[in-house]
Structures are given as C-alpha cells and as structure tokens.
Image (cartoon, rainbow, N blue to C red; front, side, top):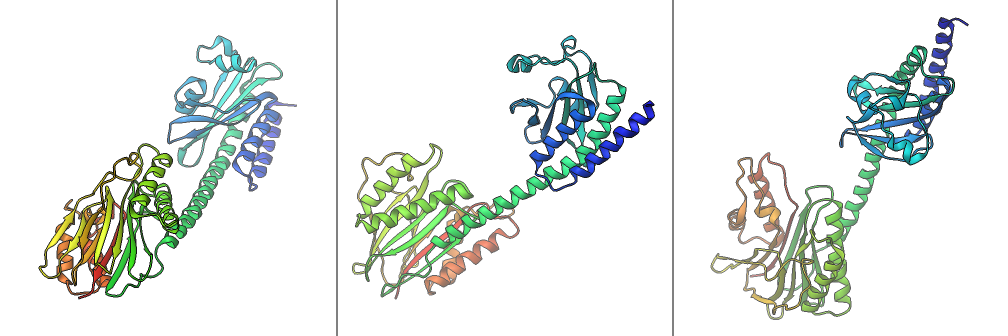
Length: 417
C-alpha cells in the first residue's frame, strides 16, 4: 500500500473518531476515548492527556494509561515546551534527550523509549491541553505518525474544548442551584412576621451582597411583654458566612427553649463558635432582651456596634459601642453584666449593620452615622416599618451607581408615643 493510501486510510479513521467524539460524552469518557484511539491508530503502548488549567498555569493529568493524577508547571519539560511553542515534539530516544524527566519512570517502573507530544489547540487558538503518546510498538514514531497525530489532535482539541466548556457550565449551574437552595434556607430563617407587644412596633430588613449573606436577625417572643432580639454579622460573604449566621440563630433558639438566661445564651453560643469556626472567622452579634413592663432593654454586644438609641423627646442620638469581643473569637471567661437601656415614649432602638454605615458612594464617601441621623430626622414620627424603609432609601440614594459592598441589615424597635 502506498504512503498516500496509508495516510488516506488513517485520516478516514480520524474522521470516524471525530464523529464518535461528537456524541454527548462526559469529559473523562471523552478523554479516555482520545487516548485509546490515539494509541490504536499510532500503534503505541501508552497515552496521556494533560488538560491546561489557566487559573494555575499548570498542565494536569486528567486521563492516562496506568498513570496517577499529578500537575506540572505549564512551562516545564517536554510537555511544557509543546504547550508553550504550540508545536509537536517527536523524541525518538527519551533517555538521550536532556528535556526528558526520568522521575515518572522511576516512580512507575515503566521505561519510556520514544514519545510524541502534541499540543491540543481549541477555539481562537486557545490551549486546551497536551496529548502524549508513548512507545510505538514497532520502532519509533515517523513523519507519517506525526501527520496522523496532528490531524487527530486538531479534531480532538475542538471536541475536548467543547466538552470542557460544557462541564464548566454544568458545574456552574449546579453551584447556582446549591446557592439558590442556601439562599432559600437562609431567607426562610428570617422572621415571617413582626412580634406583637403592646406599646411597641418592630421592623427588620436584610439585603445580602451576594445570593447569600453573613448577616442575620431574629425576634423571639418569650411572652406578651418580653422579647429576645438578635442581630449579627458573620465575617465574609456567601455560603460559608450564611451557614455561620444560620447556626447562631439556631443555637439561640435552642438556648431559649432550654430557658437559658441572656448571659448563659451569649456565653455558650460564643464558646461553641470557638470550637466550630476556623481561627480567622467570627460573628459579631447583639443579644438583647426587651422587657416591655419596664420599657428596658438588657443587652450584650459582641463586636457589634454602634448600637443606636434615638431619644424622641430631645431628638438626640446615643451610639453605644460593642460591650465585648466578637462571638467565636475566644472563650468567654469574664462576661460583664449586660448594659441597660431605657426606652421612653417614641424612642427607637436601632441595630444597624456596618453595611449601612460603611456604604460608599462613587466618591468613596461613607453613609455613616450622619446618613442614619438624617434619614430618621426626615421621618422622626413614623412607625418602625417606615423608618426602616427611609434608611434603606437614603443609603441607596447615597450610593448612587456604586455597588453594594457588604450585607445590609436593619432591626428597629420603637416604643409608641
């Protein structure tokens, strides 16, 4: 059979392979098919596909004949040179070539005699990976093998690029679904309705930066005159902080069911978070008990501040700093007595996250306490819901086109006049 006939036959097999690879395989199945077909057409013993990881600039063994998974820098060795130059490299005697890395042979007990290394170039000249074919069963790889290998690699690269993109889309959609579930769970933990205590009005708002957020708030009514208030902020954004926030709320609910005092609930939840959270994670939290019979709030504030107290009679604002360190920062060994705050007619207790205070406009100017003061002064005689809405509208106006950089939470309790 002539050389031209051999090439025509081989190219026909490549086209058959391309049609086969067009089937909706998963990426690993497709990679295995590429290796097996390459070995078969080129009459070789082994094959390896390295996929290019653009995030780490590494070549990753995804599928190989009798070889485990490992990573190498995308500019190292023969495979790295092929990736960098986008050229086929034919090494007839590997142990006579200084570029050849003998460590893998030492680890596996395999001896590589000859090697074809072919870059896999996808759409718009993008590097998909590298295909290596080892040890031709009869002699070494020749120009005919190079021709066939390049044709096979050109077809396989496009198909693999498609499969890789499809896999990324599927993973992204899967993550989106998981985030949606996490958001639904977190939003489901927020109060469905405001508590009802004679002489008081309550309101809350939560706007996460991402689909999920690290802020939380809750109202737990103990009886017709006592109410537990919770507001917190777990460090970071996304699913992890959302889980921490949900955990704090759940632990508080359990503590209340067990008739824990304000002090005990704060200490035990703090100490549990010390055990559960990584060293660089914590939760700022306000734990408060409103006793409407006394019109008094008792509270601990672990890293959460400032706590706002609007005095309706004078129009003045008090800003109370945190009373202790954040929850989960270190075990609580000497908790001070809770602070007490008396609410006169028309007064407002405001638990406002730093996502409000630190909201920056396009010029980098923060909303700050001044923004909160201005918003409340504009609606000083409104109910709690209207005050929350006014603050949210004011901070959005202040931000303009600047993106929200942190989760936003507002919890207000207002004593009726």
